[in-house]
Amino acid sequence: MEHEYDRELASAPSPSSAEKLLQALELMDVGLRLKRAALTRQHPHASAAELEQLFREWLLGDD
Image (tube, rainbow, N blue to C red; front, side, top):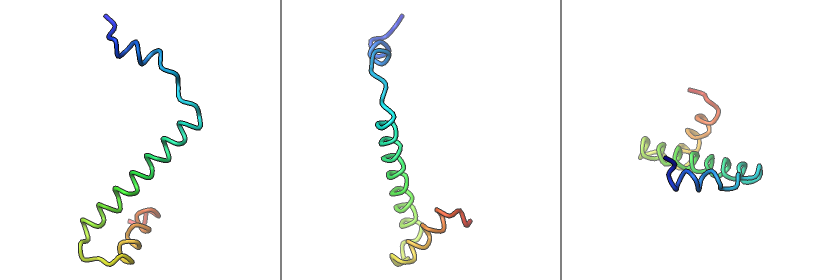
């Protein structure tokens, strides 16, 4: 038995390559903001410069 949601999903147009790229970039931005927030929580006494250094180290994979 097919549900109405399944029928709607099957008939929905597929996102274009540009839309998929935009979605990926938006998700990446959210992920980076979440990581910055996590570092701020993990290091509450760190200065902005120290947090930026920790973030850059994380981006470069120096752990």
